[in-house]
Image (cartoon, rainbow, N blue to C red; front, side, top):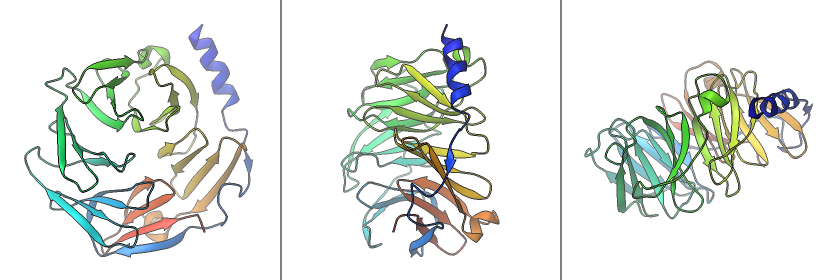
Amino acid sequence: MMLSYLNVWCKALLFPLVTGSTIGQSDSLFLLKTLPVQARFAVTDNLGNLYLITRQNAIEKYNREGRLLTRYSTNRFGSAAAIDATNPMKIIVWYADARVAAFFDRNLTPLSELNLIQAGYPEVRTVAAAADGNLWIYDEVAFQLKKISPEGVLLAESQRLNALLSERVSLENLHDDGNTVHAFAPRIGLLSFDAYAQFRQRRILGDAKTCTATSAQAICLTESSLLLLDFLRLSEQRLPLPPAVAGQRATVWLSAERLLVQNPLQLEIWTWRP
């Protein structure tokens, strides 16, 4: 029954979208700012602050003008892999090799940490902040999206996605917008779940390499363009990538209304909003 329901969604969501410029106000990206830094990971929050992991494994926070506000450094858990700044008051730093999620306040003062191996989740590669202050993880062994407390207590879990979708699923770019949890799965597309981790729907994206989404829109990176999908207006817009990105001479991260580009000389912050 669930597979039949899923097939209906798949057929309806093979993008019957109307190409247009309804999401952005420009037909091209424009450069907001450059910073003379070298980052292994970068992300922005909804206040315009920038967070990055330096090549020396330090966590740094910059304000929207590009001024360094604070810095934190430790090698206790090995290399930091990613930062979740969904809640600017409670930053999550993910140490993937050690399977540790570390929590910080807005000044990057350590608050607490959760060792997922000790909590009973040894095969987790993707974590994200839940809107209610808890943590989303994807269990690679059980093929389940799970919500756990900051102490590691299981609160909710999805169906086994490999059975539901009849293929191996590896979730990336988890994001909880307060109503829905969105995840990108390579070769599968965008998947959405409710607050109790129950699967809602699948959107198939033909040429997307990675995506981040909310209930209203998705921002996807393709080989040659930034793809903006408006789910409310059923429209799409494709913006040409900066030359360094198109030429594969840079590392790129998607963030809220920002495209962050690390080239050999500097970190570039691009946007499509005027």
